[in-house]
Amino acid sequence: MISDYLDDKKAKETLDQISEYHIEESYSAYDRALPPREEIKAILNFTQELFVEVCATLDLEETEIKK
Image (tube, rainbow, N blue to C red; front, side, top):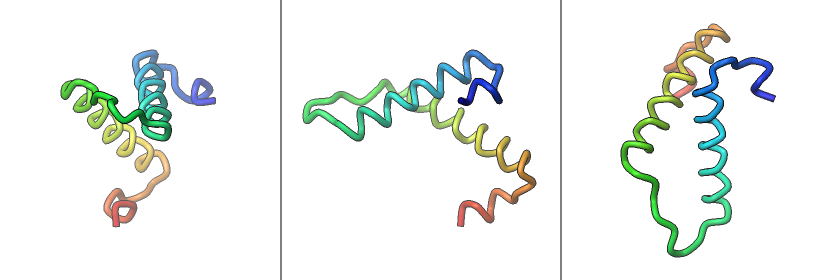
């Protein structure tokens, strides 16, 4: 569904990766290894940028949402 609103291929790939993390966490294995630190940092940076963009699009103050 996000393809209707997002044209950036890298962003779509990152969102797919985030979805995979969610599924792995929902059905986690006992001996599951964490992703590499750089990958975690990239995901966190992406989600922060996405949050800022969504707030701007919806004309919302970021600080109000983070309360």
